[in-house]
Image (tube, rainbow, N blue to C red; front, side, top):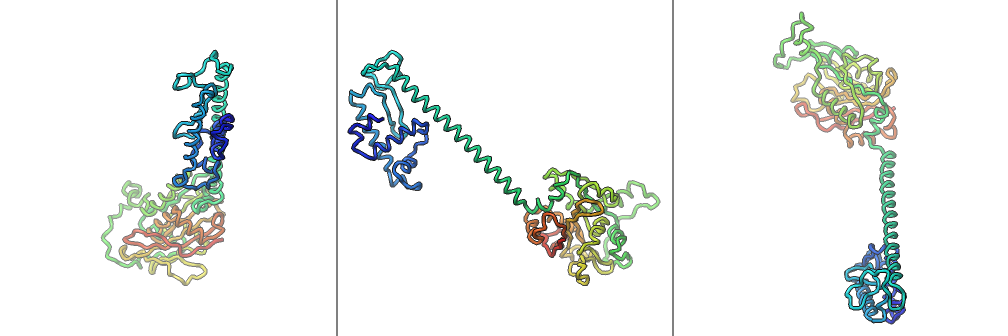
Length: 423
C-alpha cells in the first residue's frame, strides 16, 4: 500500500490516498465487510450522517478513480512480483493476492518453491499472504464475537429495564389483586345459593330488611312450578328445585374473577354460602359473591360506610351511613324486568380481622349489579379509573366503591364509579 501511495498515481492527490489507506487498514482490521458508501462518506470525507448519497457521489467517484490508478500501477511490468491489492467493481473491500505470473490472467496460489523476480522465494510471499488472510479472519471473528456479546448485553439490559419498569409501575389490576397474589393459600369463593325467598330470608336475618311476603305486590306473574312435597325433603326433586343451584349472574361474576386468578396461577375453591363456616373463610383470601342473598357479604359490609338497606314494601338501596336519608342508589326488585333500567353494586377490598384474610366483595343489589361488578374487577381500564379515584392508598389500603350500571332486559351495561371510601 505504501509503495502505491508513493507513486505519481497517488501522491499528487489528497482524496485518493486518504480513502485508499482507510479501506485497506479497515480490511486488515477485519472490518472490510462493513465498508459501505455512507460510512466512507462520513468517516473519510466528513459528510453528515444523513447526507444524500444520490446527490453527493464523492465516494463512488473516488473509488472508481482509485480502481483505475491501481490498475495503471500494476499494469507496469516492474510491479509484477509484488503482492497485489485489488478493488473489484461494486465493492469497497479490497482483496490481497500474490504476484501475477507472466501470461496468466489470474494469479495462481503460490507454492513454496516459486521464486519472485527480486530473489525472494514465493514461499515467503505465500506465507505473507496467508498471514494477512489469517489475521483478517481472526480479527473478523473477534469482531463478530464482540458484536454478539454486545448485542446480548443490550438485549439483557432491555429485558431487565422492562422488568424493572413493570415492577416499579404495576398496573391497577396488579395492585388491586396484589394482596391475593402475595398469599400462597387457595382463594375461597363464597357463592350464594339460589332458593325461593332465600334473599329475603338472608337479608331479614341480618337485620337489614323487614320480611313481609304479604306486602309483595301482585304483578300477575305466571304460576310458578309446583313446590316439592314437603313430606319428602330429601328427595332428588326437592334438592334439584330448592337445593344447590346458583343464579346465572352470580356464576358469571365468579367466572370472570376465577378465570383472571387462574391466568395468574392462583388456585381457587368454591363454596355455597349456606355451607360456609367462619373457619372456611380463614383458610385463604376470600371473594364474596352476591349481596342480599349472601349472609357473609352482609356481615362484612355491616361496619362499612356503604351497605345494603331496604324493606320489601319499598325498595332496596345502598345506604351511605354519613347520609342515611339518601336513597338515590336504589332498585325495586319487585318491578317488572323490562322496567328495570339501572342497578347498583358495591365492590370492596378489606382486611377482615376476624378471619385474618383479605376479602374482595362483589355484590349487586340485583343480579345485573353483581354481574357488572364481577366484570369491572378484571377490566384494566375500569381498574385504572378506580385507582385514580382511590389515590395513593390503592395498593394496600382498604376501600369500597359504589357502582352504577344501565340495564336492558336484565343485561348490564358498562359500570360507572359513583363514590369511594378509603381507610
